[in-house]
Image 1 (cartoon, rainbow, N blue to C red):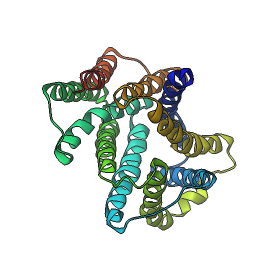
Image 2: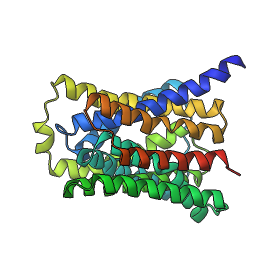
Image 3: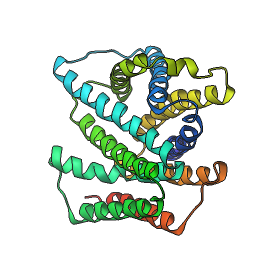
Length: 292
């Protein structure tokens, strides 16, 4: 019992921290590897690792034909559109902006759950959405210093919305799949969707210096650590910590992303950015703290 008391929070904290560091890694490697190719390579590496984990665990696979359409939508919306816009937005803006804006994802999930799952939309949930929206507006207002930055912020908002939608769609899947299997299938959809784009412009891959230690380490972090390892730890942590409390650990993502962006990339911390960050983080806390 004592092990569960610290192991669950530890696994969730490590996962969220890894995802926070992911924005800094993307900011570094996207200079060498364009966003679409980066996402494709990330999932290619991750799916190999995830399949190996599934084989080691000797998971039994049974795919229902009625779920195929939903699995495709999850892979298209979450693993393809969301990740591409997330890494594009981080490239065009900053690691801090990427970490903070996408931290509004849990709050956006409330709206999609109300719309698609008919969950009750309470005053507390509405308040959290207003707080998150205000936080995003604060950040957008502070960073409107160029056309590309505006596109970056808009891309990150799309990333947060689509990831929230994907998270709600996963709840509509039948309970016959493990979280690991869902990830493998949705990642496969992403690879299939992105492959035509990557193949059509295959010269981009040929120009990437895969012998560059920085590129290799970044790809391994994104594929093995951020996608495969962090997912497994998060999934395990959810079994040891209640659903309501587990959402609090997600808040480590923007905190770690912001601090690492400041420490490693010399990204400035402005008052406007801090106010927006506090509003978004506060919105998620309100939604979780007063969850009915």
